[in-house]
Length: 557
Image (tube, rainbow, N blue to C red; front, side, top):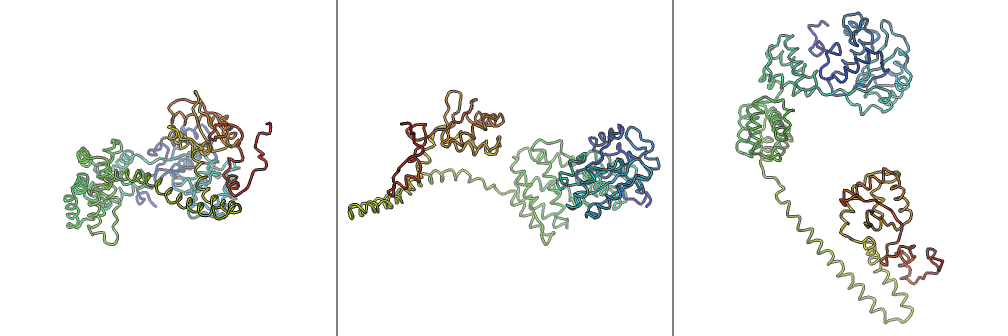
């Protein structure tokens, strides 16, 4: 294929590191590595499409095999460089992993990699879209990456690095390619347009760069498409029409109506465009871009603006008396509009206008504050009322019926009322103090903080009480095992610092934290827990059981 018949993105593909656009952080490192002979056996190039990953791989292959390199750059005129540029260099093998992703393909590569290069110093394998390889194929490639021949270099390119196994990534030098800045894309388009003899407006190139969204290849394709359609005259109007962006004036009018919550003006604009036979999807796209400019202006991110001057000026004026919520509401309503069967119907856009200008539904938000308070006062009053009447009426009628034996039969009735009563001692075991809300804040802050062995939040939640004594926060644990675990975590600097920081944030003062083992009964005795402290033991005693020996009791007395 002759150069004249090539598409622009292939004709103007970068041939040296100095020609790559917007990837200086990559090209500088690769150029120094080639110049100093510090070459890795495997590289991973990752980033969005059209940002120069494959071009960089080919440039690296040329630089490594160039007969007359200069400061890490290929000369582009020697036989090896020309062969790589024309795709006929046998020492540079390009593999499309999207269509050659099986284990047999990688086995074939593994067998051929042992052959020495023909004309150059290295055999360079460029594997494009490497994330498409199957699992067995990755496993077969892994062994070759671990122990490659001295003459073999692998360059893998992908747009989805998260799908590449970590075992592969760990054996590569990774380079992340960034989206190319709009101004860099515009400058490159100007250079290409001048060389090709196109007449281009600045606004047209800005539109192309904005639509390409950081992909130079996409931008060159769009430039060529517009130039062919309009005989080399690339204007902003032509770009908007061909790219389906709609009329700028109509989109500004619609955006201003949405921001000012003027439903009549918004609906009138939509219907004017529909009556004129304009593409309503294009109007939607153009309005979204216009409202995006309003969002950036309102949030003070002017550096990201790449819109025409008339759009920026109009949105700057429109957002002066508008809050951010209205900008977000308008942008969401338009962007969520879906044209289903009939794209010429104005109804979807009309509904979007109605949603954008309607009053927000959060006006009744303060009302729910009262019901929880009312509900909290009713709930304690309802449950106690029926339960005491049922439990108090049954025992007095059965008690006089039988003298002694029924006394044991009455116990089950009492035991049935015991479980609700025995669940109530649990909350008093952790005394309520004014610092309870701050204690909850401490636990929430540590709920996902991993200490030496345990997550600190749940472990601290097991404390039966907490008390500030001097400059220390004392944590009391009923179970000795929990106290030991907490003490172990506090003994580790990471766990202690995390806990002390959370306590300081909640209590507003720097406190040391100490874990202790002790009972928390009402008597305040910090001794060994008694058998009667167990709800299960008390329930058994209520049914007639008695304690013969308490293994936890102090036998020294």
